[in-house]
Image (cartoon, rainbow, N blue to C red; front, side, top):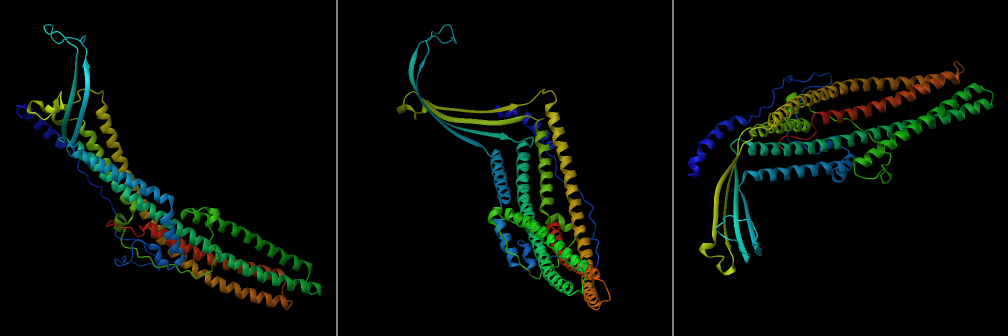
Length: 472
């Protein structure tokens, strides 16, 4: 009889509920077939057999490898992202449980007195004060019929949020490792500049001693001596400024590795650093390699599921419930057949008027989905811009490095020629000072360009998604 009465309502809810679940479709993106390449770039494919996790190993720098491992183990930022992923997965498990029947077991043991002055349920039956025991055990089962898709869409949204948290963790790892590599190469570039300045200072001090000796002999003027002294003092100022910048990069590395800045130090080192080749692949690869794109796409899926949840509020909520138990005044008769009690029923709830709240919630969810679509397109366009900037930037820096090498050779020849002319009395010492400054600027420019090429390579690797792939 119960089934016969509720069947028409259930059938109507099924028909209406089918329209409450929107089908998720990622937006179509117009991606170019390839990148805009400049010499010495050429199209390439990522090596599938290469290690995809530790992308920084392509730089072949053991010190950088050790710092990256330390950052992955001790970074509080990464630990925060891992905790958020654990929360998202726990929330998914809790949400998925709503699709299963809910079982409950209750027990009660009490001794109670019933009032003799309680309201009457029948005037022909007088009330009496009774003192008695109550022993009961009951098993309850409840299940919500997901006819409108509310539970299904809630689970889909929680799953998409958990996948978004996983992608956010990969993005945090990529940002952490790339920031550490960029700060490391900036620090080593300053070490190279400090080495250039140290050698220049030694040369300028020897030149100052030579000019002072010539001045004492009357072969050089006081102006020559003052000019060389001023050049030396200027170079010493630049040395102190570079040491300050190095300290800032060293402190940044300490924070990224999870260490206190006061307890972290990295000894100066002068080694030959060569930017590695980076395979580009196709623009469409970004959709699979960039974790921030994956995170924004999963956010879009979660927003789509919220539309289904909001839309399901327009349809009835139907819950099946049952209970089976035992109730007795005495423990000895608790398991007897007369102590058995049971119930079986169905409840349905439908909002008739809420002042437009349900409609407003649906419009809110739809606007949130539109915002997530716009954010997804923005993230994809930004990723493509970053890759193209890296390609163009590295090509320009490669050509600039070749020109800087030629300029450095020319500056050394100019200094040698100017020094010989001054010693022969054919030119003033100011020409020597200018030539020394030009050589110092050329040497610093050469090491700065190398540092920029290394940092830009890191930037390009990060723009391409590092070592992350959708399979992980």
